[in-house]
Image (cartoon, rainbow over the protein chains, first blue to last red):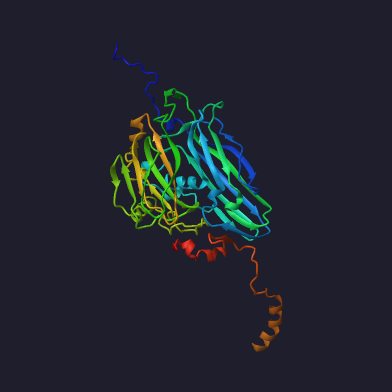
Length: 382
Length: 56
């Protein structure tokens, strides 16, 4: 009797993605005026739907000035969003507050639902496509862009989806907005609005049987999720820094670092060292920043000219490039499946060796890492 | 042929649109650079700032 195991959840028959169905629901639409300064949307509770694959946000900015209108060089239009936070039913943040620009980087470099193919694809980049807009005439400024909060990691299985099944404890989305002046300039600006429309993508809940046949009621590895963490580090400009990364304690999908001088993205010198040290073992040593940038270009296909200070729409047929002042370690793109995600503990000593550009004294670090209870589900995805 | 040209010419000139460039094209888009200058979008693409050339 001692070795007898009671199966509380007997092995299911029909796989969850077969029994379920990908669905979408409108969640919210709001408009705020950001003429006078920073503001926020009303917190958006995401209605109970099912197992959420991603939350999609479509932003539309409109600015009216008397004259001298222009877009502001830098991180616009993404910087119109100062912070996005997604918390789960218990109030735990799945996405720590990240800026719109950093969410753009997350979408571009850590896109979801693609790694089972072992080919990260360029079309996760929010900068691409005919819908995207960012321009200003002398009197009218306009921006249209989409940003996603990706949750699902594998669209073959639904792995990584977050449950949103209880209307009394639903996912909550909070979006903070910067003043329009961070992205649009003009004389006697009379109106500035930013609208958001939010849509949920999810797998529909299913019963224990479909047509009398047992079925899985949740995605494989249900309970595992990928969280997004953010930290800033003070660094010394124009010299090599060994930066202790505090975002750790999980299987790291990828790390994005952004170098800034007085909030302006600043290029890492191409000839500088780009190193990574894991528990005092050098993972990458003596690697040039230009080599790391080559890895980034080839991993995703971002072969176009580097994007420096302008996010003007790309000419049709022109590939996007990598972003100046941004370096990415795409662990998820280094091997098949999820085998190469960097396994870290809370006590892991994880260090990056970087040389920020001239006058750059701030380093932003964005890390996505998986919290895994079901290792078989995590690794068995080829 | 020369006679025909003379008769057509005044008509054509009277209806021809003005060819002089307008001073403020409403379709023209603009960019404020990090240097604080306001550029036409196509001119901004030619700047060192846009091309990522660092001046030390």
